[in-house]
Image 1: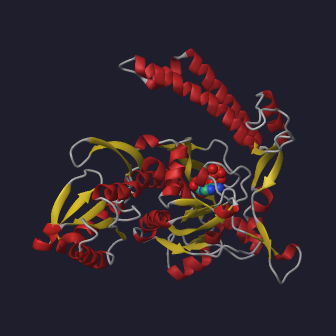
Image 2 (image 1 turned 180 degrees about the vertical axis):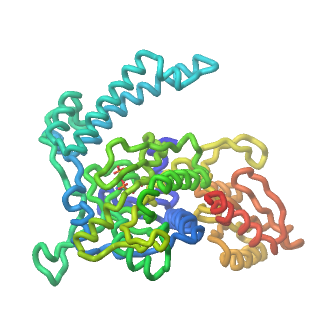
Image 3 (image 1 turned 180 degrees about the horizontal axis):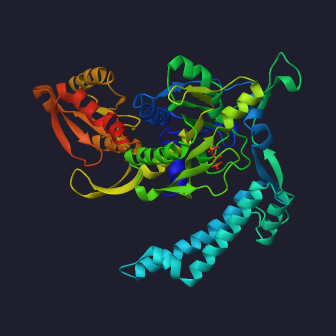
Length: 513
Ligand code: ATP
């Protein structure tokens, strides 16, 4: 499905709404509707349980959004959490210089892809890797991409704003809105939102809305290690809101100004960080595959230009409808954060390693994923149009969300065959009363049964229980499977255990081990 259809499906079926819509919306801020909040909670549960519940050596934390402003000084965010900003003087639109340049290389990449697809259709035993390496036109184009991105990354690392402006001019990049190349100079723009404490005037009372949850973990390192009796290596996991004043906020919930992160900081003995970095890369990829994201839609992207605090970093990228983009970051952050907080706070943030009989500042391997991006990845992958046989065996189209049953917003719908039949309605409601103790359910009696099935397909409900006349005689119902469309008759007494078994997170958690 194309991106527009995905966005409108999300709205129509109560997954995601634009924030403040009746006031024409607030850009890059979104609200989650009744189905959206369930789906998001389930994804957060999947992450939390695979981290905290499945590991003896990972514990949870819920730190406050507001923190002492010095934290953001020590972390480097006050001085360096910037994006390069450029305005088009004609359209007055704002852009991120690096995204304009990436937009340029994306177009070349699209041309390469087109050539590859053409060739794939032409040759039976098509070898994509060889074709990319030997086709003259593709080699030229790839060289151009690598050259442009290489130069851009060096400029970003060196904070060379003039270089970025020159590169935009050299590539003759025009404003997508006005078509003009009338650009301002490129300048740094800090992404942190700030606010003011009521009782302290001036700079001292300036607070920031956290741009990441990780710092709340670092500044609690001592508290947690002392009170949880964890020994290095151990991790602290946190899910919470983060805020970034993104310059260009496009692409729906992919890039928001208020979003939610799921971060785990894993504290290790210095010198062992590369082993842990590799281990966490592998584990995190498994987590994505277990939930049903296909291997071909996932890939690693290794950072060539490392941030000042990292000695290794990679992203897990997902193929969103607008291409492969970062879904999760896995970073080896050395002792940068704990070291910086130790220095600025004057408090020792060290760990006594009984085996080595010495104190050290632990190194950190971080895994950091946006809950909203994970939501978008799942929705865009699972939403499908497909042809299925209707009740008479004729082909018909349906819209279905093929979520893994454990994360589906509603696990089971309960449907009386007829809404005007008191006995059927009563039996259905009795089933609901029991089933709702186990899972999220929906009762639906409106419209013909086929239409009700379609409504449940459209929100990804994996099972529907239908109560018909036979139910009243022999205490059985039909259990319809969203994917196979099979309907099996089961006893009413078995509904809870069957639905629970088929929708539980157990298998998922096992496969992430
Ligand atoms: P990007 O390069 O896309 O701006 P980033 O490298 O700045 O992302 P990190 O600082 O590594 O992102 O944050 C970790 C994760 O948080 C990202 O992988 C992403 O899933 C999520 N995230 C970051 N910024 C946003 C945002 N504005 N909206 C939604 N999710 C975000």
